Image 1 (cartoon, rainbow, N blue to C red):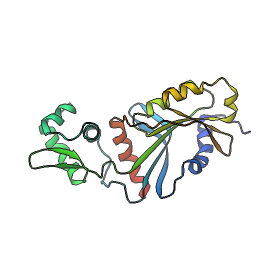
Image 2 (cartoon, helix red, strand yellow; image 1 turned 30 degrees about the vertical axis):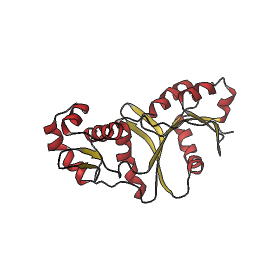
Image 3 (cartoon, rainbow, N blue to C red; image 1 turned 135 degrees about the vertical axis):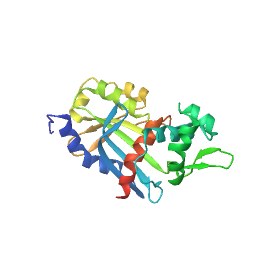
Length: 217
């Protein structure tokens, strides 16, 4: 069984196996490394979408764009005053800096009466899987992976197979909704499956806007 000196060596080795493990028919996908979302930095993120179901825009969304879209996704349509209050900004700021651009990109609809809603094209049919790789420190990995559930549909920790001989609490992973994978140098085994997460904040928009366009490149 191969031993890894650095966590970056484990990440390098496990990516090809992840491609096989998470591959789905009829899906476009991309595996990305060191993905930053707020203070969280995931070692590996897999973003996938059904063919032809990816929303289109011309550049990455700003933080304010992400907050607006997340509010509309989580809380539904709103008038501009209500939306501004939700997003801790002013109606004038929304009008002058955000709404026209998001509307031009087809991500929001604005009615004549000023009712604002996210379009069906946002966020499209997108799945995000976040993975934290660790050589030994599974508790630290579990804590980090739990944070990724704020933007990922599923979140996993991957450890070298020899770590399963250590005292690892699979119950802790199940309670946190985080999956546990082991890697023997060639294949991946699932010890704990990840629970689906849908309580996503603005970081989901942030990650999608930066990674999803890579699928069609």
